[in-house]
Amino acid sequence: MTTVGTAPPPALHRDRRFRTFWIGETVSQFGDRISELALPLIAVSLLAATPAQVSILTALIWLPNLLGLFLGAWVDQRTRKRRLLIVADLIRAAVLLSLPVAYLFGAVTLTQLYLVALLTGAGAVLFAMARQAFFVALVPPSAYIDATSKLSMSRAVSFVAGPAVGGGLVQALTAPVAVVVDAVSFLVSALLISRIPVAESPPPPRRSSTLGLVREGLVLVLRHPVLRAALGCTSTVNFFTFIATALLVLYASRDLDLSAGAIGIAFGAGAIGGLAGAALAPRVTRAIGLGRTAMIGVVLFPAPLALTALVTGPTWAKVAMLAAIELVSSVGVMLMDVNLNALLTAVTPDDARGRRAGAYSAVNYGIRPLGALVGGALGTTIGLRPTLVIAGLGGVLAVLWLVASPVRHITSLDDAVT
Image (tube, rainbow, N blue to C red; front, side, top):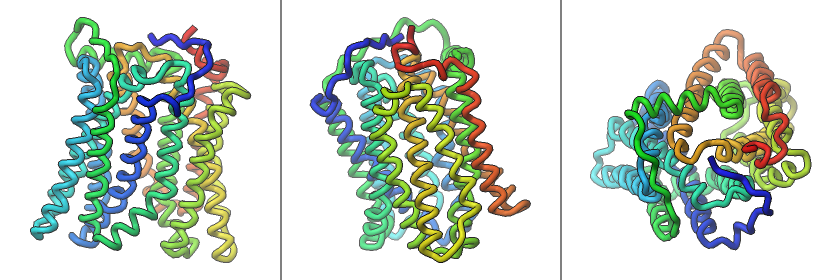
């Protein structure tokens, strides 16, 4: 298991290796925001896809996360995690480049779009599994929170500026051609990662079959008090927030009568909270402790969603209220994510990072489509506003997992591993 030292964390922005990795992640995140907009637009505008077909497209992107159980166990047996990161980036770049090529020949089909969604999702899962071990080889334990904060800031910035940049590119170049930008971002990421020197330890001798390793990953997550509490917490909050996620745009458009532009302004302005939350997380953690900061984040993330049912007034007031709600929620998710992700990294044994990540993500991400389906059913039967209240209040219950666990007593990563 990784030992967390008490020495002050190093200045990561001066570490050339981490800085290179950070830049690659930032470029890739901006590329992802473009594809998130472009892929549905290709389906809708170019292929006249139905709502059901678009939902299948979204489901296929998330589906490979279920393979994380097996992929994580396989990754744990590989020595060169950096090579796997590069392969994952190259696979996604090649798959995405197939779309503009097919577009030039007038041969884009819905089947191809489905395959692109599935394979890029699989590449993302492979990258995530290998990234765990690469991260700990690159970042000293005392800097886990700071490093996670910086990477989260890049993700937050991409959500603020990415949709606007993506929208402009899609409008100027058409959606299939705009996908080239995301493909290039993966190529840049692969190039930068290939230039990062890192010492990777070989895995221990194999003790069991792949199925045995999968079982070990599940047992580790379910029996370890910190991992079990974190999984229960994040899965619960994801289930309820995805109930709201499935309905927010529909609610803003239909019930609040906001235009697409107004909705984009509200959500884009609110996403600034994610940037602030990622920047504040290390300071708040040092001030009040890791466990308390994570618990505050778990409450702040879903609670504001219940207030969306109260939004009313003229257009400017609706936009301002939605932006404020999204801003507080975004601060909360970063306070939660930065601390819990650093905690997960600290308490996971070095030889089990891939299969822990696989077991964790299979449950944590697998619950999201279920939450969206429940949101659709509730929104249809009891209405949008009551469903949003349920999503917000239900999500707050996730904090009980942390309250009833050792996490609430953890003030720093040193406490987590002693």
